Length: 239
Image (cartoon, rainbow, N blue to C red; front, side, top):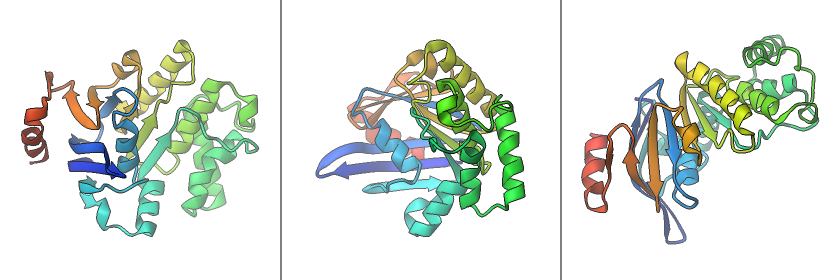
């Protein structure tokens, strides 16, 4: 099991942002997370990405309880095991595409020659072999997102967390980005993606829906999760 949460909850100033969420995600899955604003999607992604810690419950990543890790160990986990793709590509504006992709490898202390070769190979894999030396301002929105995907893959992570990866793109370019993510998923990469667009969500193999901090449906289960049986579902999903 790559991701296993048990009764995972997060409270901010007495407001429950995430309510006893239980999710099991196997290696190689492609999971979409949907829900209205304030439903808990971003909170869930922050917890899964080890950017924040839960108020209660447990989160195991590849069998390790992340709450037991030191700050340094969490930083290593984020850098080596998790790749992040955001709605805004978050690229360094003055750096070339090549240097942007190299950045996680630099933090991982990969030697210059090896990291340069890895970054080149990844940019070729996302179709940007002719744009490696261009800065973000010289790239289209879709090309910038391809660079962001290549950067997320730099350290060969076990998991990609994508937060509205097509949200700033037109529909055609968005589908091209989804084709690219699906390609990497077919090669075995696990992807968890937040989206408001059901057309985009349907490209995943599984859709989790949230409302008011709670998991209310799992498209594979084909049933709605009622308030009264959430505790029972948690026990079943986490056993």
